[in-house]
Length: 78
Image (cartoon, rainbow, N blue to C red):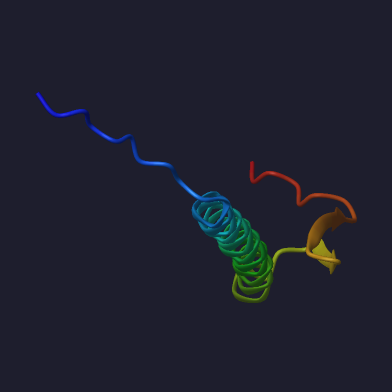
């Protein structure tokens, strides 16, 4: 039987895969934060459209992507 020589990996191998791992994680965080911002903007737009089309008496003030109801809610119909 022949003696098998074990493969010795250089530090460049680990450096390469470490950089790849960090790049993937950073990319995922970037996409996730972008998706969250988009979802907040769509929520704000939806609230504004509902207010505009519904003609409700309670108004909505959107500041810094956080919608805060202002005023008294409309009385329920009898």
